[in-house]
Image (cartoon, one colour):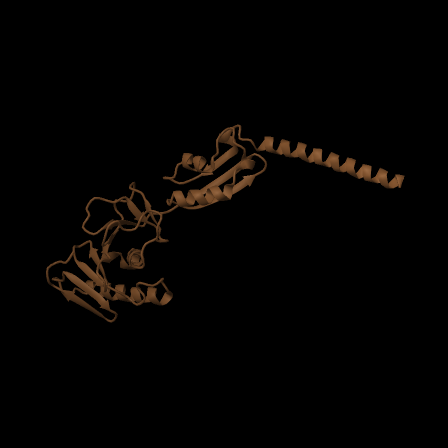
Length: 261
């Protein structure tokens, strides 16, 4: 019995010692996680438009804060929702007292505006169809025109028809179709997409699966229509075309009436 009591006492003593050792180690770890020099402890890699300060503020990173107390996953989700310009955030903890954050910004491929509006809205869209705000460096991008206010809001995705317009613009930007010079797309018509070419001609176009998520078949059909259109224009069958009609897969029509854009 005495041996049992002694053994129990030893176990309690060991446990007590381990507990206090754990507390001491935890205290030391938390001390090492404290941000005392943010310039050397926090690395932020970002692009041209999302500033380092936005990332620091979003994660609550500043001298005096403790990395161990920051819920990086929750802050990451909040920042992505708040700043749609950011495509992704990668966080790498370097224990105990350092962290590296890599920011991938969205790349604008087209502007978004309302039909009839001349002043830029500041809204742009990337290849994923996500809309965000950016003015700098976007003046030469093609435009997708929506029919009604307020239109898609920053942080939202394009409607199916507007995404089809984006697909048209991205396909037309490829080298083999650049001669078409599609600079603006109006999605207000119900049965087709209306585009304006750089030579002031217009284009009516639709393709199979246009308002559905893109598939290899729908992409191929769009390419067939653009190829047929390009070849028809290059053949110079008419010099009086005002509106090209590519709403039928195997035929291209030329309308010589007044412009409709």
